[in-house]
Length: 115
Image (cartoon, rainbow, N blue to C red):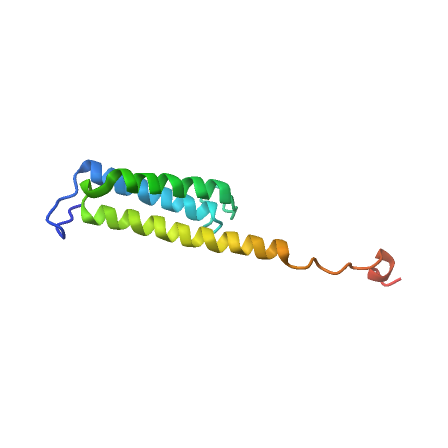
């Protein structure tokens, strides 16, 4: 994978970093319930784990700084921003669901069965 846009060729470490970022981004989207888990075929949401994944990506972004090629920095920034926005959406959805009135009682079981 060569990237000549900023005058740098991505070396092996840059390529590994890109792979790590994309892997963490995919895991974060699965944790947010936005993607089906490939092994289980199910959608499961774990906002705490998603927040931890976002924290790892933010740490990588802070530690990499100006030493990484522009393309790697762009992918990393985009991954962090996309996950943060989706995480906020899920937190808002969770809070809204917790504040919405519960379903009205179904009544007694006799009426439901037509008795």
